[in-house]
Image (cartoon, rainbow, N blue to C red; front, side, top):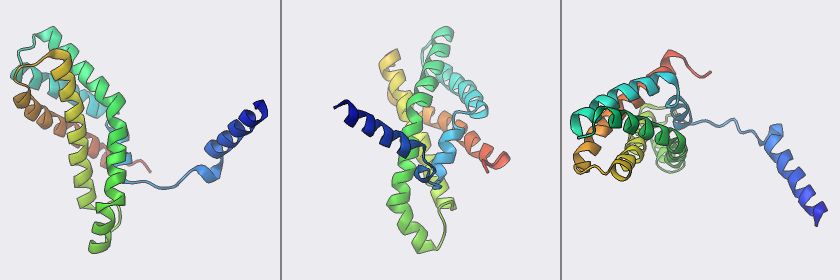
Length: 168
């Protein structure tokens, strides 16, 4: 039994660390998800979301700061994976047909637009749920809409950093 576990472990390590196991496959949401956790979008997101939270909620200054930090930390830890997988879903389904129909590659304007919309939606959902469940907001729907506007600003900053400093 020990030998079988050791063999299984060796196979797993070989698969994970072999050069053949690394795929050279990228899609826009991989780039965008990585950029949403860099300093520029985080800084802009914290400032903009703080202003929105103060304006559209009844949270006091200290509680608003904690809320914004908690929301962003949660969306950074959890949100990156759904953003990546939503982009993969797009590429495997809608993007495949769109790319073929328009004779375009993966990094076309439609895929980038869909990627940005999905990233904003995912971040807004996660951060909105943190506000709703963690801070018991009464007017959650109105706050959710404005939170989406704030998230669109930080996701657009993340998108722009791809052009300012390309990943390749």
